[in-house]
Image (cartoon, rainbow, N blue to C red; front, side, top):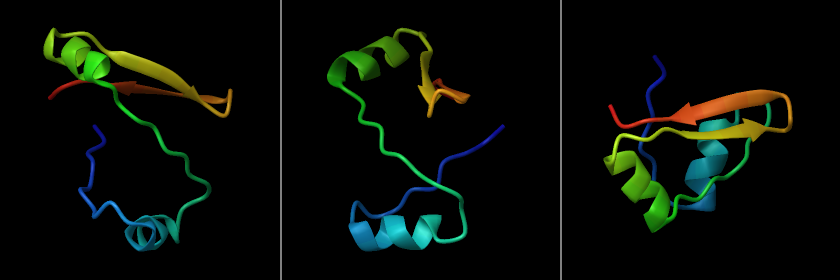
Length: 58
């Protein structure tokens, strides 16, 4: 299972985090998304029409 690293919300922190990775994107969660997660739902989206990501509460 992948875990998230919590970083500062700055361009510098994002650049430092991704410097050894290939590509990146930003996703924004709405209040409705957070409510759905709290209700046990799973968020799903695609990354560059090639990969999928699923977000759930742990």
